[in-house]
Length: 112
Length: 326
Image (tube, rainbow over all chains, first blue to last red; front, side, top):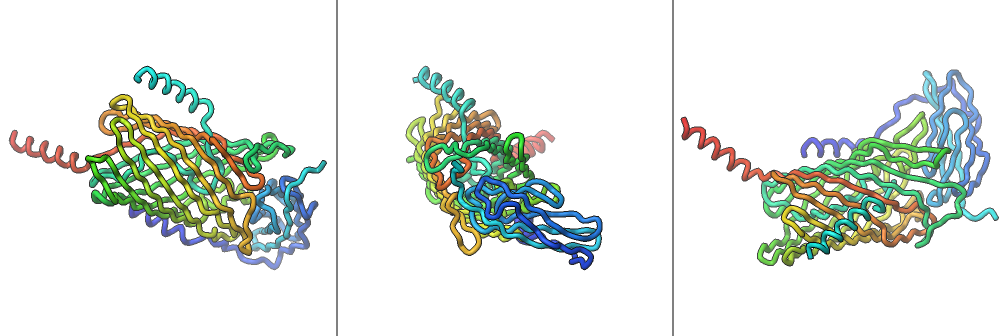
């Protein structure tokens, strides 16, 4: 019980990203093929960045991202309606930089 | 009566085996609908291990199936939970549970698949034996507790963060209070259960989200046709209010009300071992907006109860027996 309580208290400490900002990476832009995008449709999100040996990390505060690298597929369900933030972190051995794109998800409606 | 019970049991097993339903891809540990709710007696230790499989694949809008989407989405999870309870005194029981998802998967068959796995949440509860009358066979047991988001949240696959719906942990602290009342009548026990759960905002680097409040009310009908065998029939209603996102914006497609029928059979083996099997079957579903609805779940639970007072008494008597023999 004591161990479990300790675990619980430890959980209060959220994870921090310790990566340093890099001056050798630049994000030029992030684009979305569809914006706004209807719920249950998809939008291709692409990051344009310069630097050596770049890797890419993607996060959406609402909705789902599939894929990896410079272009990923974003989709959202009806409960993700609103202005959502997609963050791309571009990193290499020198550090990381990040940028966001806001994508509005609208309510689903029949396309007929 | 015995014959009727036998047919009823066969029907029950067929029903639960083929058509048991339950929730899927909800936040954190799923609700374990086991009917064994009263507080433990002093110095009783209870350890149980649950396994639960749940599946979901139908969208709902209000109380009807929604079939206009041009794709199919399926969700399933394989979940296990360890529960430990200890009767500190006759009026206070400490309980804890820790969940683990072998998988929590959301997929569009042949197109996309999102799969999370890992530890869920840790619950710590205090259950009180507020009133107990063995002559009337009446017990009243309120509980308060906290669920800690100790498990995996912000899980990534190939540098892409998984959506909230497949993260194993809820990502937020949740506080709950419930009340269990049971009354025995011959071979039958009737019980009622009411629960309220409040979730804090998820405080994560990437998510700003608050699950809606969860209200649960259940009625149990418990019958023991034979000495070691118990049938429990449960009717339960789960109502979740709307979730909230940034700027206190309410999320329309997040509230729901689902009424379940949960049949359960339990067999008591020798030495206080118990084996239970149960399933959750939605009888009525209402979803605001469009949502993937609860599907089916089947659960197995094995429980061991240890009476520490009896254990110590046996040890003392065997020690005494040993010293008398010397």
